[in-house]
Amino acid sequence: MTDQNQRECLIFLGKLDSKQTKRVLHSIVDGICKLGRPIYQEYGEVFTLPQWWNLSDAYTGLVKQVVKEEITKDQILEILSDLPDGHKQIVLDVISVRRDDIRQSLKTETNSISDAVLTDFDWQVKLALSSDKIASVQEPITSLDLDVQSQQGQQIHSIELNREDLKKLITSLEGANKVVQQLKS
Image (cartoon, rainbow, N blue to C red; front, top):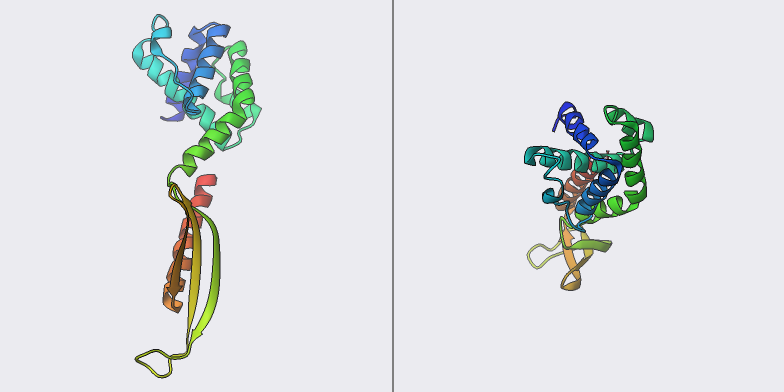
C-alpha cells in the first residue's frame, strides 16, 4: 500500500466516535498480537467491506511501522494529519499503551521463521599431519560444534571444515548478517 493510499484509508477512522475508535484500534493491535481480530460485523453499518479491509490493513501497517522503526510522536501526527485531533490522540494512546505487546509479537513472529535456534557454538583448529592415503598433509582443519535448540530438545551438530569450506561458511554468514541488518533498518 502506498503512503497516499494509506493516508486515504486512515481517514476512514474519522467515521467512528471516540469509544468505537479506541475499541477498533485495540482490536487491530490484538490481531497483531494474535489475540483475536476485529470483526467486520461490529462495524458493518459504518464501513463497506472494502473500506473495512483497507482501514484494518492501513492501521496494522501503521502500528507495525511505528514500532519497528521507532517513529516519533511528531512523525505519527504528520501521518495522521487528516484525522480529527481527538482521533489522533486515541491512536497515539493505543500505540503508546500497547507498544511492548506489539514489539514482543513482532519479535515472536520473526523468531518463528524457524523452530530451531542456535544457542551456542564451540570451535577448535586442528592440524592434520597425515591421512591414511597421504603420509604428510599438514592441513589446518576447523572443528565446529553447533548447539541447536528445537522442539526435539538440545542437539549438537559437529562439522569439520577445511580452509576453503570455512571461508565459504564465513562468507555465507556475513551475507546472512547483512540481510538481518537490512531488516532491522
